[in-house]
Amino acid sequence: MHLEDMARASPGTDNQVPDLPDCNLYLTDHALVEGVRREGAGGREAELEAWGARLGRAGLFRLASEVNRHGPELRAFDRRGVRIDVVEFHPGWSEFLSLAFAQGMHGGAWTEPGPGAQVARAAHYLMHGQVEAGSLCPVTMTSAAIPLLAREPWFADIRPLLAGREYDGRDVPLAGKRAMMIGMGMTERQGGSDLRANLSRAEPQGGDWFRLTGHKWFFSSPMSDAHLVLARDGDGHSCFYMPRWLDDGRRNPVRILRLKDKLGNRSNASAEVEFEGAMARRIGEPGRGIATLIEMASCTRLDCVLGSAALMRQALVQSLHHARRRRAFGRLLIDQPLMRQVLADLALESEAATALALRLARAFDHPEEPAEQALRRLLTPAAKFWVCKRAIDVTAECMEVWGGNGYVEDGPMARLYREAPVNSIWEGSGNVMCLDVLRAVRQEPRSVSPMVDELGRAHPGEPALRAAADRLLAALALDADGQQAMARMIARDLVLLVQADLLLRHAPDAVSRAFVDSRLGAVGGDAFGARPTALASDALLRRAWPD
Image 1 (spheres, rainbow, N blue to C red):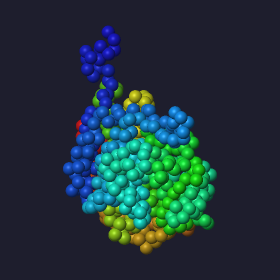
Image 2 (image 1 turned 120 degrees about the vertical axis):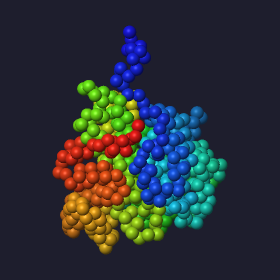
Image 3 (image 1 turned 90 degrees about the horizontal axis):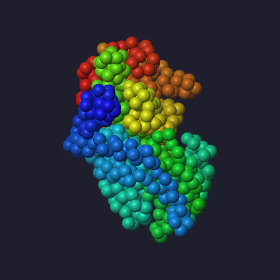
Image 4 (image 1 turned 90 degrees about the vertical axis):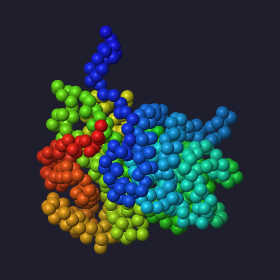
């Protein structure tokens, strides 16, 4: 009898775990539901529940695998030899962007503001990112560009396209489109994160129009309808809005040299380009382009945190689904004490990341409140550093739960693992984020230390929080070189304190107690399951994934 015949005769005897079935990504995520209500978006739950069901269809996960397996291709010329610089995508790419636009993730929080708008968008992002992460890149850049462009007198001309909920992927001038996307082109081959080393130049053409020459080493989402780019303008660098098509119907001369062959994020295109006198409009103050982009980066960095939290969540769900159905050494994986310890540790990391991300999104909902803006300025780079780093470890550990099956491309774990590092690199690597935390400390000296002290005092029965706060305050009192040497510890401890505070206030005791004891109270390594603290309980594991 063949193996497949044996499996049909005795279902389950092959000990292979079926794919995750249809599920509601919202209703099955208790931390997400509670966070949405707590952070001010409870009035949008009906919409989130509906999208949770739609995004949780098993067919979408299969489509996401196909979209990433068959990535974009560059077609520089048409059949007649005319330069067109077109990137062609798998048909599923349009489906995922259509889903994102219909949810309003590309701009709805700005064009349709209201109570909890940013938190609701964050919840959509957390669900969408569990299914297909590459399509989040153009969504993030479009959303982050809107607050900057809204200050320009000509913004009214493109606002309806940025508010459109129907994705329009046609490569045609804006006058014929229903919606638009905006990409970014900042880094150059000689500079990377050091934007002051950029060499692209802008020559005035009259009014706010300039002609740009130069290159970009990373030009994200090259088929977007416009890009924000950085170029030298006199003695400084300015930010420019560069359309793909000009008003006279000609393509702007932005030449795509090649697409990057990336580790992950393979559904999305990233390109190297050259500007051959490309036309662009200056936005913001002349010579203040880097400052303008730093302001924009707070939005893109929030999305890095959300995207990493989404990957953690899906990796955890896949691991729990697997462990409850896979047998080894005579019993299910989920019933084995060591595996339970590891899975519980992963569940704590995921819930803490979700709680932190939604709290941070709430700060974006309240730009008029100084305390919220101080928190946003300090916590955004710290969260990007820590959560994005932890996502790499979480996805690796979840792959290990699957064993050899996790290491092959047929299943979901390899794609999740390859996707994880991009958020730690994009929009500033870990060291850049930690240095930005220190800049925020210098800019807000009167608010940071009291904020940390309050986190240490907020829970009198938790001496571990007080000890962590005192350690952090001592590091913040060092001189500049001393602070920089301790910058990663400063960012980490800040995030852990905020996460512990959130969980102690809002999560069940099984979650908050285990988190505080393992992250702040125990001496142990960072390997999941290696802390000298009993973490696993049925309540904790069922809360993480109630299948």
